[in-house]
Length: 121
Image 1 (spheres, helix red, strand yellow):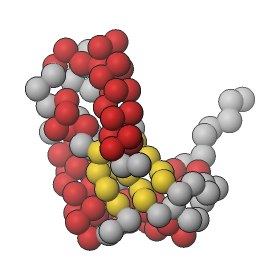
Image 2: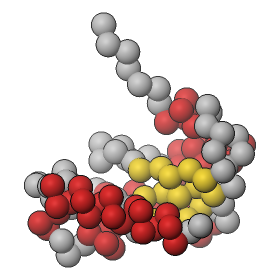
Image 3: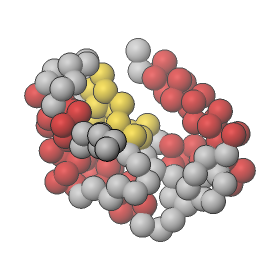
Image 4: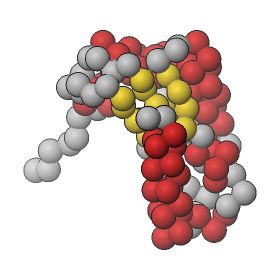
């Protein structure tokens, strides 16, 4: 029987990094409270910066998650957003079905993360 991976909170509770990047899955729809709990777990473990990646809004339900992320970032100085939503908004060729990345999307997402992380050094 395969082992199910730990939840985000379980993984966060084991993290000891100074800077943590969190990318949600597109099946995840956390509340603001859940985002705060995850951030709190990470900062309690020593993260001084938690970088949350916004979701591409290929489906309307992702807007609420991005709104919660923006609220979190505006109220917690340890949080910054990596705005994939803005980066990918006008690039339908980066997606196969408005959610899953195409080959070009994988390349673009990797370059986006590398650029964003380099800018925060």
